[in-house]
Length: 117
Image: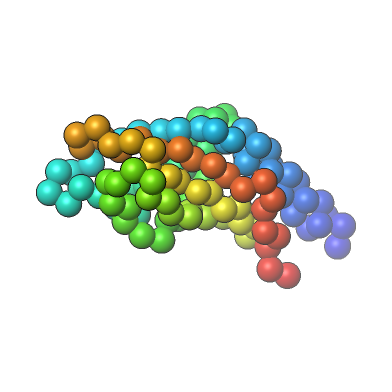
């Protein structure tokens, strides 16, 4: 029984470390002009790439619930799911739009949610 708990604790510590590293990160991406929004899948990929680069780790599993319009101040909550099932919330906020380029601030929560038992 101690081994699964140790593994879960290690995964949660890793998720917290990723969260600590992401404080104040930002990223940008070009979007298609007709819809002037970014798809949920594209945003999830952008967030995952930023997390991986910041933490020098493999790209994590990130999902975002909805497409994001190219409007400054628009915020969405994405979710990083660790291999053990624990999760970490990530907020992505549009901080500027330059033509078809959207710039985001990405902020991870400080505390992960443990995996269901």
